[in-house]
Image 1 (cartoon, rainbow, N blue to C red):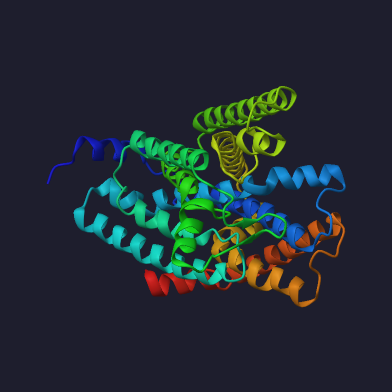
Image 2 (image 1 turned 45 degrees about the vertical axis):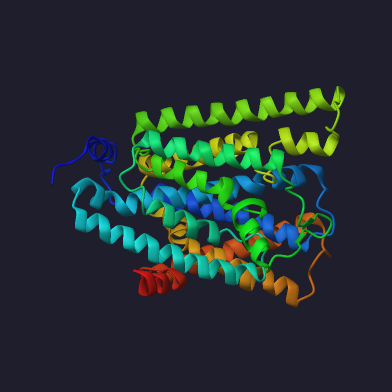
Amino acid sequence: MGETGEQRHVVASTEAPASARVVGYDVARSLALLGMIVVHFSLVAASDRSDPVELAGLLAFLDGRAAAAFVVLAGIGLTLMSRQAVASADPAALAEVRRTFVRRGLFLLVIGFLNLTIWAGDILRVYGVSLLLASRLLTASGRRLLALAFWFALAFAVLVVVGDFEKNWDWQTLTYRNLWTPTGVVRNLFYDGFRSVLPWTGFVLFGMWLGRLDLSDRRTGSRVLVAAVAVAVAAEVTSGLLVSHFLVHPTDGLDAETTKALFGTESMPALPLFLLAAGGTATAVIALCARVAAAWPGRVWRPLAAMGQMALTWYFVHIIFGLGTLVTLGVVGTEPLPVGAGYGLLFFGSALLLSWACKSVSRHGPLEWVMRRVAG
């Protein structure tokens, strides 16, 4: 069976870099975990999340952007996993990869719903749905992947404008009402959860496209880095100008809170300016990590790379055992913000050392091993 034009385009754009595994991606994944862990520990432990102002600003910046990097890297991983099958254009190989994606998608959905029982910010369910969709997009052109990412963002923006995004939220306690009703489960997963399929799966699709580029190559990596920084800066500047304008010149229906929600770059709701700012920042960090790790290879990256390769395990463990320990000890909303962030840094440092030790005796992390055994 001959290749289609679309398949030839994909094969040409997915030439494997010299190394089968890009260490820089593992390092970037570890840094994304660092951002999420510190934000989550601060959110749970801190009694006042606004003081000191500098730290509060940093955590607000990390909130959503670290998760965006994590999700984009998931998309890159999907492309790397399927690269050999796509390049071969072998129908049997492609079918096997699709089956693996489907099984893993269902596995992550189950794990994600279990995680949701204790952590409203679960992102694994979004991965699950994204894997199911990705199984049908292995040979999609880069243009199609980017177009789909755009439509995910646009569909979410339209829903926010015409719908009631806040319907089920109690913002004072950050709790979601009616979660375990049929309607609540669907709304939370696809629309108004902390991290929902719309628009976050768009980051996965963008990552699938990005994974086709060799970011460890100096020229390619530099171009992507410059473009990503430009997009992030442009989004932040545009956001600042729009928010300032409408705060000074308010219009009907646009109070300060609504203005910041629509034109700010906070992660909820994840509207276009946030997506551009977070996506640009995530891409810049990923490109920089890939470039630096390729330029200076060596053992210095091993601890970070080891943790990045166990990202699924540590995402789950930092919630169940990390945040769970804070709850058990009664350290919920009781500490100054720097102490809450310090708890997160302490957990990350411990996880880094454990990952390094674990990788010396085992190829995969515990949850990664279970997923491979169960879902292939």
